Image 1 (cartoon, rainbow, N blue to C red):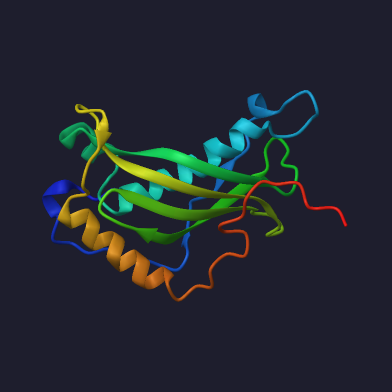
Image 2: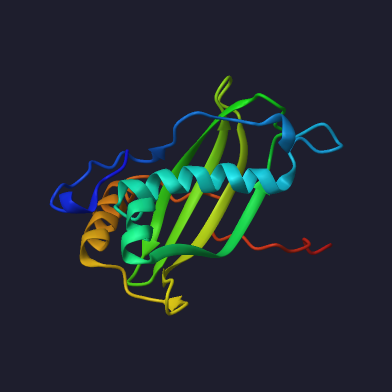
Length: 172
């Protein structure tokens, strides 16, 4: 769904969580181990996040006209199940928090065939003025849509894996 900027008064309905369209694992993404290369999990997550950005009014039209976008600042990916060429997948997107310049969200990637979770990603993204090459405040229309999404997503439990750190467990 692409929301044109001249329809800024329209307020989308946000489902909790957002569920992406079906995506397919492309054959060229398979590594020498016979499964999806780790880099392409990020591609799938990014495509799902692009659907959300379009929904809140920060999609391709926004980037082209306003020269602002969201840039990923930090991620934490967990690879849980192998994906193979041709597998159909969907991602869920849960907005955990946002402020004037940041989005904090959590995505889960599922095999569409059996609903098995294949991976998760936690992301901190920055709203960036592309011409100034620095973080910039989110415009009111997008902030209002993020507030609506956060209110809808606040009904969901916080993902168990959100906020994890990478560390070796202490040995006793």
